Amino acid sequence: MRKLALHWQILIALLLAILYGLYFSTNYIITTESLETLSKQKVSEQVIGKVKTLEGNEYLTMAEFDNALEQYLSKDQIDEYHVKLVKSAYSNPALEYVSWMGDIFMRALKMLIIPLILSSLISGITNIGSGANLGRLGGKTLLFYISTSFFAIITGQILVNIIKPGVGAQVNFIQEVEGLVEKQRGFKEILIEIIPENIFTAMTENNMLQIIFFALIFGFFITKAGKKHSELLQQFFTSIFEVMMKVTLFVIKFTPLGIFGLVAKTVADQDDFAGLVSSMGLYMFTVIIALGIHGFVTLPLIVKFIGKAKPFKHLKNMTTPLLTAFSTSSSAATLPLTINAVEEKSGVSNKISSFTLPLGATVNMDGTALYECIAAIFIAQAYGLDLSFVDQLIIVLTALLASIGAAAIPMAGLVMMTVILTAIGLPLEGIGLIIAVDRILDMFRTATNVWSDSCGAVVIAKTEGEKLKV
Image 1 (cartoon, rainbow, N blue to C red):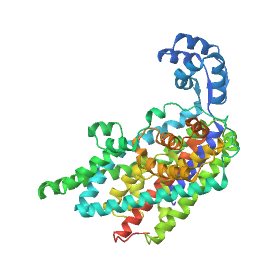
Image 2: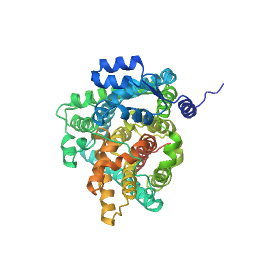
Image 3: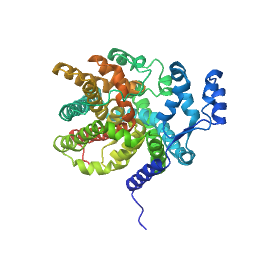
Image 4: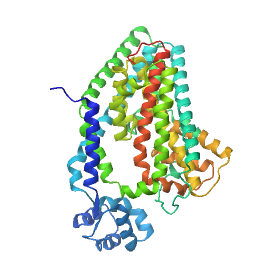
């Protein structure tokens, strides 16, 4: 009997997970166990006493639960304890049977990221050889990533101005977002913080830009060491990379189960999905159509006419990593699968993929940059503000710069939004307009980011004279 291809297994798991999540939606209920948990977490006795009045009541959505809390608690108390209260009241027994698969899958992927990035980049740079070769390849890679991000932003800007999804949007439909301004960092700070004070701290904190900087420097100076030591280190890191790819292939086998657990939880936890779509449908439509144009028109044209390759054959090869990126919303977590698909199926050499893909997963954010541009103009439209040509130009340039530095920032997408809104003087409260649908759109933009990274590897490999399977 013929075995079902992995991408079909993932697609089936994705659809089943959506149905499972819709059927077993999350509720919120205060129980005796909830009150005990709050007590252990050092929540004040006064708050626990007030929350106790809600014991036994079941709330079908988080919005209903929040409304109930507002009747008994002050705004300051809700702000201080909201996360703990929601976690203690969270109730979805059916989801507990499957969500652990997603947790294990994500942990396994994250386990691979740092050793894979370090070994692949160092191995790739030692294979590239001279500083001139490294400079040429680095220049091509950055040119591709900046160009495609710029095209993505322009696509988003044109569509949001034509469709105008923010005109007539409910400005009172706002969720509160905290702690974003504190995480803002200037472009100068991001550049300085690329250099790690301690590489082991950078690894512990998953600071990808610092890890990549160290790998680039370390790999380059291996080529400057004596022949004996240079060859030894080159073989060492190449061997580590080979082992990590074997581990990756093993983890890939469990992708359908992992995706089922992840997506089922995402769908089950989504409050009033139908209501969200009806109120934010035009905004979501604008973002998804713009991402579709960039992913299925702009990038394939670049692959075909600049890379002289077959874009849709390459797209078919990328099915597994793209579905995984969509489900996990993480370019970095998908990186092991992306490297495997680009090398094994599309035929890009390890020399190119090990340099371009880790860099792309960190600094190439086409989908995110496009999304930020649309979101900023949508917020301006919702508040009834007319943006001048200069304002829109500032949005384009800020989105481009912010997307490059996004990997160095926690809560990257939303923090980038505060940078863009601040640059053009829009109210930061506007982020509350889009936060409700951010998780859903994050899945689409992450898939676009990964697709762009893989297209970059193909185009750069072809310009370097490689013969590919696409």
